[in-house]
Length: 238
Image (tube, rainbow, N blue to C red; front, top):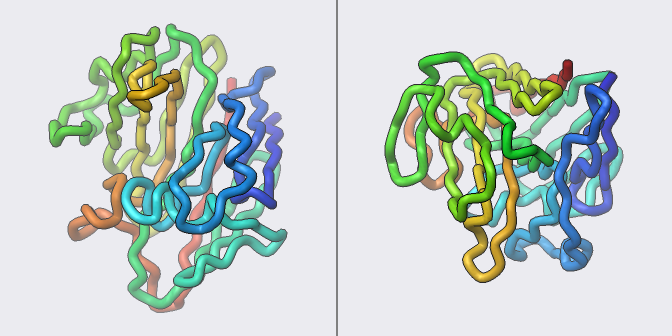
């Protein structure tokens, strides 16, 4: 059984994800999170943030996290996003002008032990910060103890991953006609420089880049002629 909680008033953030007998989401005290306004720098409170239309870049972590949501979703000007939850699946609907390009990520920060491992199909292409490309698994698959590093990577064209940490948590993403990937933020006490902490993000995403401004052909999701884009994120545990 999977149970979730959302904070609709503060960006629609997922504040709890319980599955397989444990809580999976990591959180940190962050009072400033409750006073943000659209355009503010990102305030990391943990949980799972809906990052859209970009993750990095402008606006920082997207436009949805800094706006209040209602039961109908959130209006971000260029687009409107809604989300429904049923048993183990979040279903998303984005309405925008046909041809609108975007990146979306379920920016899930997980509470994981040093022995946790990220499992994905062998040979999956991983774009690593700094421009390197490697075949999965790489050393980044070992989520590991704190070592003062912080690295991002994107597992390209990867619709599902599993985090093994005693129990197993699997994210599966369905988005017909759109690029589907998984982002990894492996921060083992390397960020931010002035006051680093540990945070590990496993982030199912539409797109193949963190920053929409860097998206080449095929690297971003595109709204079809209907003006509606829909996708589903399934969460399961064992």
